[in-house]
Image (cartoon, rainbow, N blue to C red; front, side, top):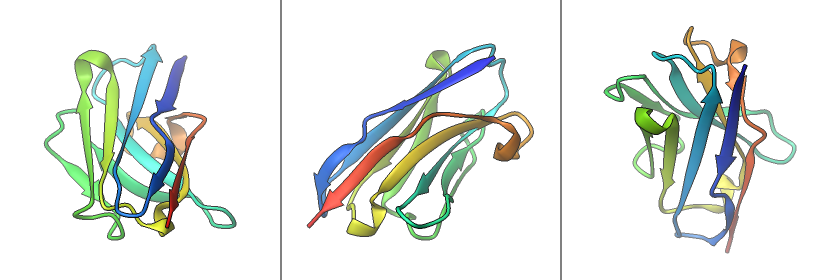
Length: 119
């Protein structure tokens, strides 16, 4: 069993920054990708960013490229999402997930952390 817990959400003004953290614990093993997703009110969950085990390969949604940075610390089984130049449309619940297969739909998910960007 793997537990995934996100933290770091909150209220921030437009143009501000937040850093989300996500810690995986339990029988995590190694070699897994980690990713961030988000769901805004009334919308479907969408992909934000992902990072491979090595940390060398990352992918971002077009909407966050150049503003968000994903990183990880395997010694801590933790992934981070540095979010800069936040916009109101970034308001959402942010979820973290792990995947050994590359398909997060069959991985482990956290409960989410709320990010609210106000003008």
